[in-house]
Length: 298
Image (cartoon, rainbow, N blue to C red; front, side):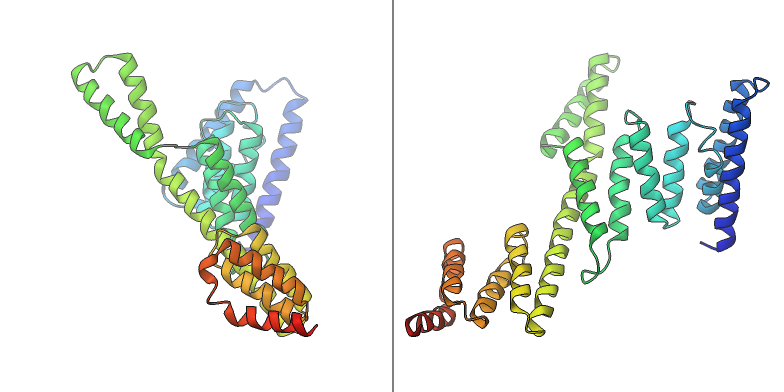
């Protein structure tokens, strides 16, 4: 974002803060005037957003953050501002506003979507696996929270419920119970894709975290710092056993112990590995032979 835009935003927020403080000291401006101003500004921002002018929509909405507090449009302003930031690829700002919305107005109708988009904001910030993975961890945390708060336990059952109440409404379209059940099932069904997306992203990011630890371990091996390498192989074994790097981590752990001539520890690690994965017995035969030979010579 250009420096001039940041300066303009700062000036706008300072002016808005001053307006709010002055209005708090005066009784000459009724609350209806404030609500009308918020409504007008929000309508303008909506129009800009619809035209995909996200940067200008953000500027308008930023000027409404303070004046919209405790009004009917408070959550609308925050949600649309977060969406504008997200579509402008300002993911840190988007995440901050989604989080603020959820904290300030936890019962908002936007809660489910805001939680999902908060996770997606961190997903967008997740870097290459060799870099710091702070945002990857936050994305996993927020996607996991989304799944905990808004689970869809049985997609087939939900789909069946939608179809059932759709057919019942054809028979009795005015039945309030059918209408309510159909709306509830439809809302659940619409969330199946987002739930699947969250689960896939968690799995993909866990692979990324394992890869990060593995790359660090390999770098330490190249530097001849085998004890440090072993710490990161252990991290994969302990925390990411569901990833595709689990076998490489065990193999790396055993190899570093052998390089350090920790033959007893290497034998224990090999036994643990083969207890968990007995199919790897033949693959680890040379390591077993070398460990046994050095234990006898020791």
